[in-house]
Length: 287
Image (cartoon, rainbow, N blue to C red):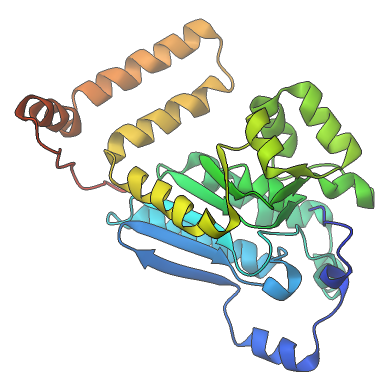
């Protein structure tokens, strides 16, 4: 839930005029771009800070994408100058006392999004613009592929306000960068720039700011052009590896490879290879 520090306008309330204008806009923009479902966190005046409404909208949008056989990839980004500054602390203060319970907020709103991101059969790309702090950083890192603008920063900001990492940060970070770097990120709460994040393996790629949208969408398009069933099985294999020893993972790979080898996509891939033509993959089957 942590919120980025060092940016006073994140904490300040918008003017009445701005607030009225924002109330008429959805907190999450959902756009279809071919076979890609593009989700844009749309609270730019709060650097897209999370609220229960925004988290619910993300979960619903992921469910809708999963259920739509014409969607083959998901792209997530933030409107304005930042990706996501974490939980909107000011918004929590406006909730009735019975709705401010941290455990309830995490269980009801954050954890469903985490589980959907990890369990989705669809490949998910995050395009990180500007700051990704606290819960916003850990949300971005749940994506399968993260592309960031060179000016982007990842900040485990929780310790700055006396909190501990959540949104699976203590699970994801050690697996991405190792425990030493993960501990330092969380204990110090210092920003990690996009180029450093790429060098560490925290993200896939850092790109020039003015190329972020094009690069990230290009990745999503390439994923959408891949065999959907094979991608889903690859994601299953990586998910299983988190808790498996070598023998158990070999069994998972054998099972998934047997399923993939019997698929129409594999047969089409072989035919296309022999015929020296582009493959025509089967429609995606919703999970």
